[in-house]
Length: 414
Image (cartoon, rainbow, N blue to C red; front, top):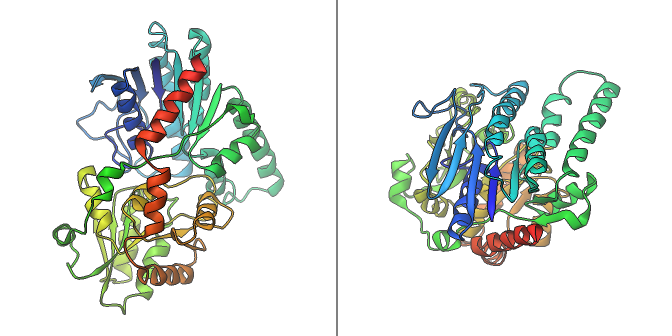
C-alpha cells in the first residue's frame, strides 16, 4: 500500500501521540508498505522547536525509508487555550500546501491523526483528488477537551455557550462522517464517535500499544533513581510525562504536602511541558522537600524508570479524562505498575478499572483527599501488579494491534 500519515505530532517526540505515530509509520515500512508523513517539527512536550530544526520553513527527511515532510507552525511559549487554537490552525494552513505536494504520489490511504480536526478538510480534499480512502484516527477529542477550558470559564451566558457548542459539535460530527473509517483508542472513545453520528460499520478499534518484551523484563534501577536525585531506599511516587494544563498536577503537589510526614516517600516528577515552571514554583512556595523534578528521560531508560516506581500517577482534570486516554498508562501496565488514576467512573479509565478490578486505584479527580487515600492504598499493594501484567499481555501487544490495523486498511482499499 501507499499510505500517507498526516498529523501534527511525530517522532522524535518521546511522549504522547508523536511516539505512537512514529512507531506506526516505521512498522508499516517494515511490513513492506510505502509510507509518506506530513507533520510538524518536534515541539512536544516542551512547547518549543529546538534550534537544530527549521522552524519557519518546510523540511524534507527520509528516516528508515519513511519520507517525511515537516511543516512550519506557530508554537506558543505559554500555550493558553486561544494560543493552542492558533497553533493548530497554523499547522492546518501550512500543511495544506504540503499535502498538495503529495498529489502526484497518489496515496491509496490517507490516515489523519487527531488532533487536529482542523486538518480534516485538507485530508478529505486530497483523498477526493487522488481517489484515496481516508481514515481519521482519534487520539484525543480535542473539541470536547477544549470546551471545558475555554467556554466553561469564559463568563459568557449559558445560552450563548450552548449555541456555540451545538455549532462546533455539528461541524465536528459532519467532518467525522465524511471519512471512510474512524478509529480510536478505547471502547468509550469509540462509543463517543458513534454518539457523534459515525455509522458503526465505519468504526475501527485501534488502541495504543506497548513493546511488551522491552518492558516486561524491566527491573528497579537504584542507580538511575540516585542519578535523578532520589535516595536509593526511598519509596517512589512517580509522575512521568507531559506537565501541562490537562493534568492538573497542582493536586499532586498538595497531596505531597499532606504526606510530608512520611520519611520513606518521595514524589518524582519526570517530564517537560508548559506548566512545569508553575508547578516548580508551587513546590518551592510550600517548601516541600519530598518532591523531586527531573527532565524527560530517553526512551531506552523508560522501562527502568517505570519499574523503579512503587506507585504511578495518571492524573487529569475532571472533564478531560472522558475525552482523552493517557498514552502513559500502556507502559505502566506493561511493567506491572500500581497506578492511581484520577477519573470519574463513567469515563474510559473508570470503565477500565470497573471491568478489570485491581488493575489500578481509581479516585475522584481534583480531590487532594481522594488522591492521598489512593496513593496510600496503592503503596500497600504488592508488586508487580498481576492484573496489570495480564491485561498488557492480552490487550497491548504491539505486533498484534498493528497487524490488525494493517488488515483493516487492506480491506478498505479492496
